[in-house]
Image (cartoon, rainbow, N blue to C red; front, side):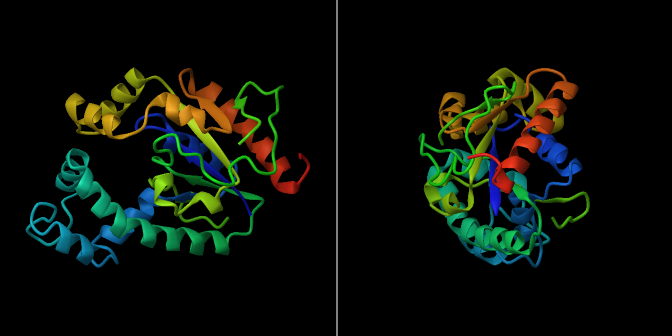
Length: 245
């Protein structure tokens, strides 16, 4: 199946772009949702997290204290790796299961932290060359709905080695760091300092763009973004159908 990995930094607009693809009927696999399901009461990963982070990440009622866990993993790289070791294999299995159930020309898999240390996903860029006539940036190298058709978008690093083989192409949603901070603060209860700490834990904008096959620039109007998504949708349909080399 032709699969597009959609990525970008926090506050770049990944969810907005995923929703626009979903409106066009494209299945979107959202690993943030998968991770949430795995860590809710009764979720498959909750007991393992409780054992690794016994008190700091759990509320009195036994539910996961997501805000506390976020503070822990963004301030402690070793703790972040422990959490990733718990979640990534489980999320990978669920992503594969959902992909195997799809009957669509292509699927979007949103991966907020796909890029790490300029590592390029193996298999990216296969089966579709750049279209220089489009306003969206293209680089020459390289469903079944649940609710509103968003199945998943996964926050997993390439360095885990778990997703390279699933992706045909990498799409990066790009904006300035100032816009990332402003948007994240507007939609959440995070302080500027917390948002800056999250940005510091992610790769730079330049590193992310370096591995992109396609770039969506989310710095203008919602209408402009919708137009870019529509253009990419037609391109991916052609790629999936084998109309483009």
